[in-house]
Image (spheres, rainbow, N blue to C red):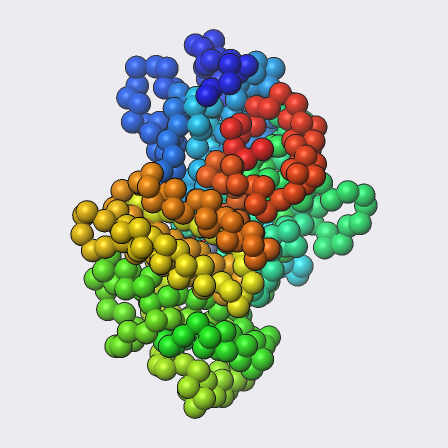
Length: 482
Ligand code: FAD
Ligand code: MLT
Ligand code: ZN
């Protein structure tokens, strides 16, 4: 239910924002006669699963504008949703009712880059791929990479504490983000845009914003340490006969490739089959296998890396850890192999919808969950090849190197019966293994009822205290997890 403590948007409010932001393109006013379709993309999420009813979208151009917007909203009890690229997968970036959307897309400038330290300072609305391309020219890389890089914003990445494809090598944003500029609901600008690697001066408050999902303030700028870009990159794609063999391959990769290993991604055969069905593209290996993995190495010495990779490949082939494999020969092939992994989320949406579970689990038990869920849905008669079955298949893929499984259930339609079989079953299963119900996507609205499966009452109470301290009126991203 909409909380009646929040004010309803009026013409007077809109006029205030029009005066503040000026230009027409900085505001989409759903109260005016203008077609509501302009506002539609800001109201629905990437999966088209969650849809809000905002009547106003604001696109500030500066931190000062964000500050004035939030102060006015706080004073007038207008609820807001911070929004980046709107690629989040838990319904956190769209309104639930009529909250005002504050989208950061116009705050998209690089502020500075230090070529010696590798520290980048940029506005929150810079698109991840744009930041990475800027860094490529300086021979550096952004320490985060993910499939939505063409649309997601670095502020959104920090707000979700996104993990992605490079975490294995470069670690999480909690370590790489050195500073944050954010605006609190009362308009206070938190100027913690430090560029220091070490800074033990009291509580590290910026950490609350990393993964805070827009519940205590709006991130307007970040500083982040970016590694040197590796001159030698190799990508290989393997077929394997069991999950046991995938684990063996991972151990060997860590042992033999050690410092040059930059990604180890898992894809089950079913996920690859669906990529093939959705795209019609030729898959890298002729024969089908129950499991695949993608290994990337990045280093500074081509000969040294190739030699290491060759020895590794010979070993895993000779010991039958892998059944078949292909090594990319050029940049086009590198991208083709990566697309088999990065393309999965989009392909799974091909049939209509997807139930997505982003989980941290002990690596040895990770794939058992996929089998258990498939058995459960199959026994209930939900899985099949035709329209009479809601479920297309049950698949697993993810960041093997981080013990992060993506259990996905692509469906022809969202179905209450399927949902009841999945939840809370999946969360109970994860809890029984001391896992996490959200490894890297956050909680948003999707996982709001289930936080207790991963956090104790004490921890939830402490989180609520923080929320109340920073946002006493509760205007920031309400109805979401906290
Ligand atoms: P949005 O979706 O707009 O917002 C996400 C949350 O952050 C919302 O709660 C919003 O309120 C808040 N927020 C956004 N901007 C700000 C801000 N400036 N200040 C405060 N709060 C803000 N995630 C991973 O971790 N790893 C992956 O590998 C990965 N791959 C993906 C692949 C695809 C194809 C897609 C669609 C998504 C993927 N994601 C992945 C999900 C991931 O959370 C997002 O892609 C990304 O981090 C969100 O950024 P965004 O700018 O789109 O944020
Ligand atoms: C990924 O790893 O591809 C993303 O986290 C998106 C997803 O879970 O589908
Ligand atoms: Zn992921």
